[in-house]
Image 1 (cartoon, rainbow, N blue to C red):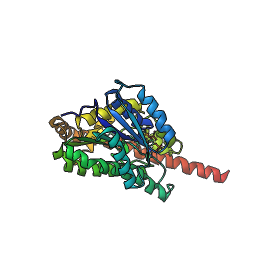
Image 2: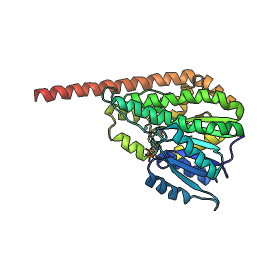
Image 3: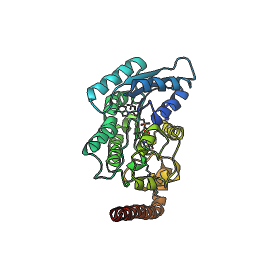
Length: 307
Ligand SMILES: NC(=O)C1=CN([C@@H]2O[C@H](COP(=O)(O)OP(=O)(O)OC[C@H]3O[C@@H](n4cnc5c(N)ncnc54)[C@H](OP(=O)(O)O)[C@@H]3O)[C@@H](O)[C@H]2O)C=CC1
Ligand SMILES: CCCCCCCCCCCCCCCC(=O)[C@@H](N)CO
């Protein structure tokens, strides 16, 4: 029942950088044909060269397509058609194009909420909508959505980002119920902080509170995250997470998510109370970080006024 990657056509949005590029490399190493989708053509060509170094046979192809996945559905549909003409029907779609902006609710521009929803949410809807009919007809397919740990819990600074990542979960649960009888499987990945160009960019404007809270978990390597995501997607696991806090978060927030194995279901049932207890301690420590930062700010404001 696992999807065989040798000869398969894998489309990766956001495949020119970070986690997406590593997912493309991981699939290519296992014999897949790759279509990379992103906006910047230079970055696409650069990534193509890097991926091609990992070929395992001389038939393998890396195709690059430049498009903004968040703007116009027809444009995205055309691009998927082009890719299917060249490399055949899409066996696996990885929705990894995304971006993050952090800041206090009142400091974020209203347009940032719209932009993150467009890229992170609609940018996953459009490519998925463009491949789903063929996948159902062929009774073959995998769709991966890259959410985030910040799509499992709301944290200081992530009012805009978390909402766009939570939205993906709702889409994925509903879609999985629709397509399961057609042998199409959905995976939602919840990566922790990962060392990528996007993460470096995000860190330039991150509020102190967000940074201190995020430091609860360590920063992962994109290769490691990609390996786990590809493995879970091949197996058709609905949930893909990494590390002990990733495991706890996924068990704790399982809600009405589909269950992939009896073991997974049993583990959720047995660990729920314990993980909620642990979570209460984490929440307490996050609240105290936020309170400490607030008091620090007020102190320095008073000091500034009297000086
Ligand atoms: N790094 C982290 O700490 C974490 C990241 N994530 C999520 O993982 C995903 C990848 O993150 P990361 O690897 O850090 O990101 P990067 O910023 O390194 O890469 C983002 C990729 O998406 C592409 N992209 C961005 N916007 C669009 C768009 N509108 N249309 C098409 N392509 C687009 C970029 O290319 P171009 O700009 O040329 O279009 C690039 O290829 C994101 O969804 C992110 O939210 C989740 C948890 C943690
Ligand atoms: C039982 C309960 C366990 C609770 C553990 C809680 C750990 C919280 C840490 C959350 C870190 C947020 C990562 C966001 C990454 C991201 O999406 C951005 N970096 C994007 O660039």
